[in-house]
Image (tube, rainbow, N blue to C red; front, side):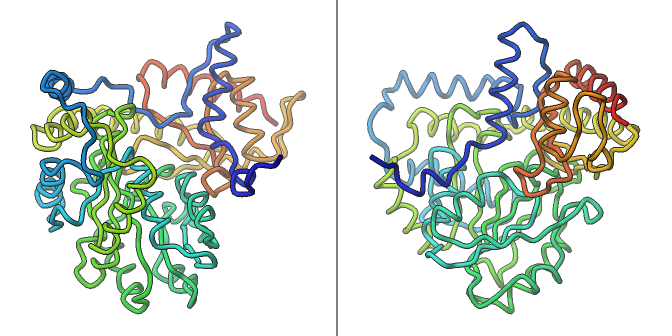
Length: 396
């Protein structure tokens, strides 16, 4: 008996692997500071919890529509207009069981075997795997720390061929925290205008965790809006990771395709989460803004600490809750027992010697870096940076 080849080609995400290894060491009584997972450490705001309880008491326990409750689709439409000045009627919006499913639905609905999918690096670990599961051929465009990990119009133009079908990116970016400005997006749009057969997936799940002002979406440009698929959800901005609700706003034909696909996979998203999300999206966003402000303080601390650590090179994230420092200057160095040959060695060294859990950058498409999540308390971050600096100081 053999499993399907598509399963054999899928590996466990490094983010999950490192978190698992950290838990195993904790179980052995070792003090581990976990900076591996991208999960908010805040509680869900009380008014959202109360809306969920209200939905339970009102009996929202039956199958919902596949695309989502009409009231939630309206709420998302209102949010997109209010926050992003984007006009998407409810019939162009699909609610799914997490933004990851929204991404999967979109990729499976537009990519055929042999189609090229352009992904600038670094990127969220799941993009490439989903593209490959659809039979797509992934073309990576390297974007280094010197360019704030952002793709240039010239790089984009050079990467496009007659086989290119999809471009996938995130802003704010996981793992680099990079945020595209309106001018930078406009420059990319000029390239896409010359290639009208390419879809664009814009992952905007970190929209509210933004340290440079208002969020800019590539869907704001009318010239290409009919090819843009906006992905968002409740996990990051509202700390609702376990509630599992994502959504997309897309051209009508893409939304219809995703609804058809979802109807054969999960059907509708969780009913209680949907009702609570209506309240979350339409209520006062003060709790979300307070969370973002706390992330900003943590970001400033982490980046200052990394910048003042010899051998470490980093950009300054303008969104999300990650740092993505370049640690390649340590390659070839040793503490006498462990030799650091690559980013994976560094992640394991920091885990076993520094007792800090991070994620190797190669999981995100850049093997010179590691990802550090600052979605944890300032106390943990202070201790983590102390341990990291002490571990790195042993390498020569």
